[in-house]
Image 1 (cartoon, rainbow, N blue to C red):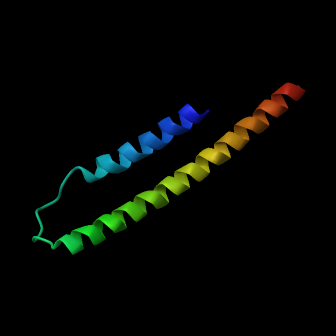
Image 2: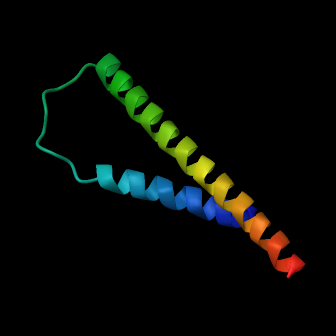
Length: 74
């Protein structure tokens, strides 16, 4: 189960990173502090997306366990 969780999280990360690979028009040169702040914002957004994904995966795992229990009862 941990390998599927790792695979799902890895896939989510790759999809999130893949959408940002297509650069837009070049912008003005930023200071290192501005670049760092932008990276912090992007990282926070990514962490929030990962938290939502992890919560969904936990719910799916609970549902799968319930299905196993109900399947054994039948």
